[in-house]
Image (cartoon, rainbow, N blue to C red; front, side):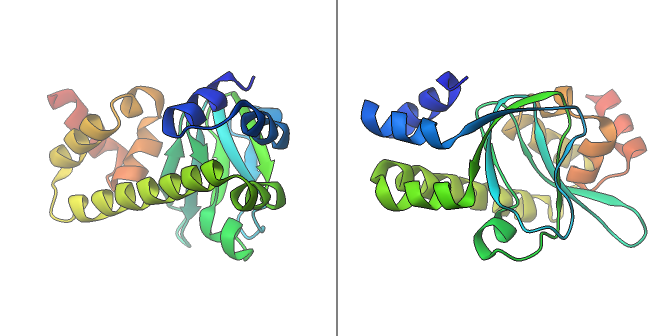
Length: 189
């Protein structure tokens, strides 16, 4: 259950076996059903998740009932409602699984304990934050002025399995398109 997490950590930093054991001991394996809510809107986020199998989605719903997807975490990736997790304020997103999922969950207290105690874990946390920021910036600035076809080509180039794993409705909400526009664009590819 911890092999993917260990592989992830070892691929990014030189970490001792003792430190790996301490990190793994802080993560609790959980299984989640498809479309299971991990964090409801307005709740304060207390956990960070590593995805062994499945997918986590962060999204919001506006007053008109339209969903906007902000982030997906697939196998081998971390996911949480980061602003709520860090600031301990109510989440402005929902966090849910979109597939039957096997996750490793760590509490906020244990997570920051590891950040303080194990320099390699702190290094990985910084990498996760930097990569998340860069990806968000590329998505935001890259999408400005992109037409629908360019958006779909961008997601194919940067997240090749994305359109194969995610429903048209969710993919469209992530790309800022209507589901019908996304279907037309995909048919042209």
